[in-house]
Length: 208
Image 1 (cartoon, rainbow, N blue to C red):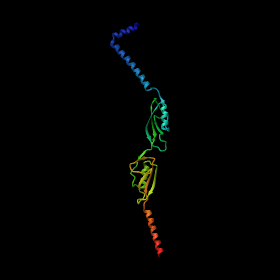
Image 2 (image 1 turned 135 degrees about the vertical axis):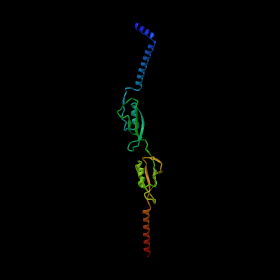
Image 3 (image 1 turned 30 degrees about the vertical axis):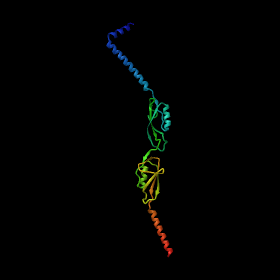
Image 4 (image 1 turned 45 degrees about the vertical axis):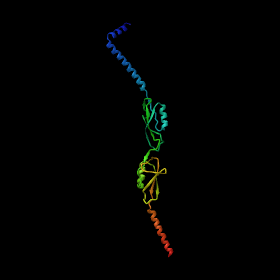
């Protein structure tokens, strides 16, 4: 009781000092509470290991990550005809990394739909140039169909799924392209003329 009375008397006689002490005590208490709250809110000190989901389908990967309290976001997609659409090819953070619970895992997956490509201006190009244009864009199936024309080996048109291709169209990279290339009349015409001359000669011989 004597100590309490002395403290009470001190605060009464030194109000400014007493207020400063009270302010410091309150500030310390608030800081302590704030630090504790932040530790709880940010899971300070808590860590989990990121599982490997490379090679899984998107559905399998998300199920696995959600089950371990991660969130998922697709950041990029690539086209790869050798892999199943939706397959995870990259992830960040890397497998085995220690992160806080609830961390977002960013995935790169194989595109669910084929890459779309713009048809170039291919008309009146040579067969070699026309084929190179489409193969250079990534088309794997480029066939040729010869059509009657006086212009030999000239690309006169192209089709995809029975539809004529016009420059500027956008079609999937997996499309099968059929180029229509001129056959040229030169060889056939010469043969016809030679045949005609031969028939005339035979006719004349019979007449004589």
